[in-house]
Image (cartoon, rainbow over all chains, first blue to last red; front, side, top):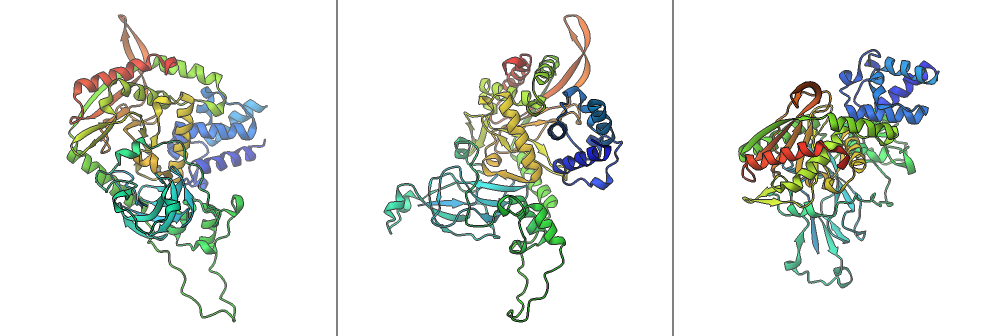
Length: 81
Length: 411
């Protein structure tokens, strides 16, 4: 997957979880738990969605690496390359 | 004959707007079916019916806002249908729900709670309740919206698209004189303000009527978290558990030991509930909160509670809940989660008699066996109704929660 594909996937899933969030205003470097008030249930749902779209099994211990947009791109690269 | 009334969906509801009927006169309904969609200050509610029979007459049309307890529809209950005798026997007219006060019908707590089947409404275009609410807020006429969802269902996106679209072209020449655009029957609700008002009413009533007492204790969560981490390693990502699930189960089991925490205070007396329907306080990101129930927590496995919790959070976010979830909670649990603070002493949601609060899990020095070590520690609190129980029983309850969390494998 390219960076753009990962980002698009991430934002699409984020929109499902937090429909009120302005996706254009998301800072890719900042933790989404702070930016759009995601809780542990939201992060879990994000992990499930990314797992289902990419097939990458994401251990719970790795969730903190995926809580920002940039973090998720880097994490998925490290797991798929 | 039986009356189907505008239900009271919690202490903070005074009136509701009938958004949609999912049945029409002549339709057979059975207990637990979703028959109508009602909008309240807090959420869009799919209202379940408590009787089996045939819809005779719909009294309140779609779009109308009526007070709690208003007759919405008349049902011929099973056995009466064939008879259809002209003389209705008034003595047998049993309302679906009691009069507005007490706000939560105790009977509702005992109602069968299996998830209601999807409403069968083949006679009209399918519209999601969320789409309907958005349509009302954006003043979109649903008759002009083309559905793109499954089976042509109208989705929220369809409504939003229609709202942005330019008004339809002027009517062709042969058309009759232009008709005034259909106005939605109900003014759009400023949901955030309405929700604040609803919360204010319920919480003010609670503080006015309920003599609260408060207890708190620190719980060593190392066993619970250790067990959960090991368990989640074995589970695929789709079946993993959140620690709130352990908390909910521990509360439900502790309630069985100390039943004074579970039930309702109605008409000057405590009415305990056999089943534990745990109201889970879920915050709504745009502001406000709601505490719908997970039914029969004491009988569910951790995996089943997780599925229910996940489903509930999704539907709270979408703003669509079921009437039984709103009315049935017998005890409320609020968990601040990992973004929260250390402790919470909540306000009891009337007519319930207890609220259990869990703070953020923090690594703290913990002395045990003469040694100090770092442990994940969580503050558990109880807000109890002094009319229904005393601090001593409350303390036993919190102690039971603590003990149960030391043996997570048995939950």
